[in-house]
Amino acid sequence: MDMVHVEGEMPVNYLYTAGVAGERFLREIKENAKILGIKCRRCNTVHVPPKIYCERCFERLDEWVELTGEGQVEAFTTCHFDHDGSRLAEPDILAAIRLAGANESIVHRIKRAPAEDVHIGMNVKAVFREKKDRVGSILDIDHFKPSAL
Amino acid sequence: MSVRIKGYAGTPLREEDLKQRKVLLVSYWPKAKYIWSAGIAIGRYLTELKSGRIVGRQCNKCGRIVVPPRMFCEWCFRPNDSWVILKDSGVVNTFSISHITADATRIKEPLIPAVIQIDGTTDAGILHLVGETDPKDVRFGMKVQALWKPPEERTGSVTDIKYFKPIER
Image (cartoon, rainbow over all chains, first blue to last red; front, side, top):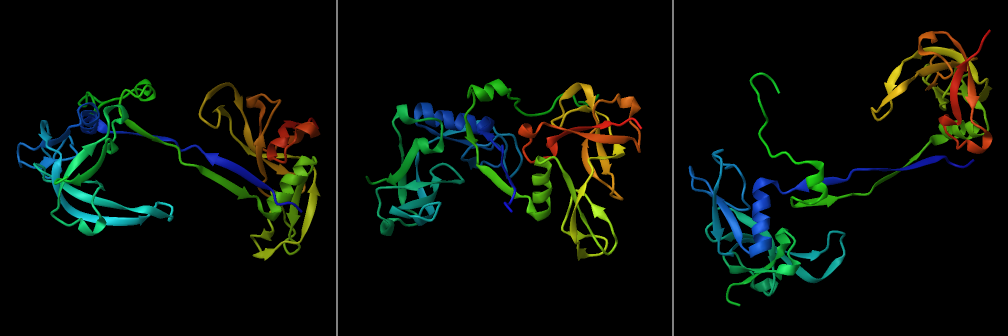
């Protein structure tokens, strides 16, 4: 006797927006290759990526600051495998980068430095994609390279 | 909204704003495919429906015939024993009058979902629709008969019966 079965697909499409602060942050990266943070008037914390309220003291945030795009590696890891477990041709170095002027780190990719040379405290600088290739994503910053280069 | 709350904080977006990508967004459509196998009892039940028959299973210990069928008797906690071909008539056990469809769309002519207790079984029954009846005439215990779709339209589903219609006795 054949086994009766029913095939189906659950439609679970979702759209995730950047939010009020995220919208401005990403648009500034896209249009002007500039990284913005936002400063809290009460506790002076500079948040990046920017938010519309301060997570530490709940103050509404509206003081946008321009960051230089330079910073220091706060933590990093070297990935040898892809999301699906297949080996990467070249290791992918991901790092938490504390941008100069900010009190929080962003996660991004480090290139043009061999894994053995990457260290905590290493000075790095953002490298942006060509304007025509920027879409309003954190990957419009292509990578961070050692500041010396 | 209430007397004191005049509006909610936030930035409202319209469907059009999203469609036209007026705001930056990420869209993801994960593939949530599934295959659900019917099992032995329901597998046979659906196959028989395609042939225009309603089948149940009988437990020899308590004598109950259950439809839709399962392979065990939940009263006696034992596997049941045999397949039984049932009539396609029964009585309305319970019913509801629905003015909306499954996705909550309003409809003009109401649907009458009902539990039909098939003749020869002693409790519960199958969930289906009562048709060709004025909603105000449906009664508990009303005698009904299945109206089948023509064989070429049947797919091996409970919808191979179009609805149950009242029988005059």
